[in-house]
Structure formats: structure tokens, C-alpha cells
View 1 (tube, one colour):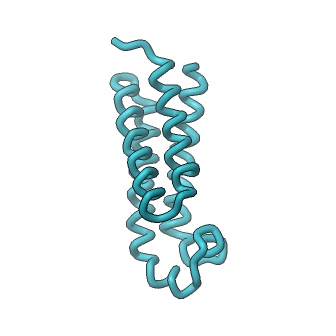
View 2 (cartoon, helix red, strand yellow):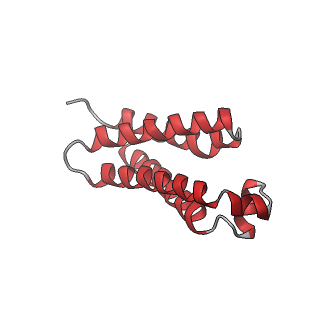
Length: 122
């Protein structure tokens, strides 16, 4: 279970690093426009907001990586950042697009469950 937990946490970190790349650097490209169902004009108008959001996704990814490499408190760090991802995913699903629930919140919830099941309490 510990290997599964590590893989799921790493997957969530990679997803958020990917969101950073898309939102900060690729937002106005045809790929991002298709992925998010945006017009070129909307992509240009919202690029600064998307970059800000991308930066926050980068912080989530960094926190998850920190949790993976931390010797002490790694479990607590992973739990905290996975909970942040879940809350952000639930909020995004409720306010922006339902698919965020499955792309962001569900993988984080599965990773959190694996982390909780794989570690003994100290």
C-alpha cells in the first residue's frame, strides 16, 4: 500500500505541475483553448489570472513533492497538501466545471486514502 500511496501522490504532483505549465505558459495556445473550451480572445483576456492560478498549482505540486521526500513529517505534509487539492477540486467543480472533480479532486482523494491506509500512526 505504501508504494501505491507514493505513486498516487506523485501522480497528483505531476498533474499539478502540468496544470502550472498549461496555465502559466500555454494558456493562449490552441491546446489550452481546446482543453478548457475557450475562445482565443478569452484566453488572451484571462492569461494573467490563469498564470496566477498556475502558480498556486505549482505550490501544491511542490508541497506534495516535499511530502514525498521529507523524512520527518512527510505523512502530515502529504495529508495537508492532498487536502488542499481536494478542497480546490471540490470548489472548482462547484463553481467552474464539473470535470475538475474527476481530474483534480478524485485523484487526490484516492492518494489521501492510500496515504492514510499505508502509514502507521506514531
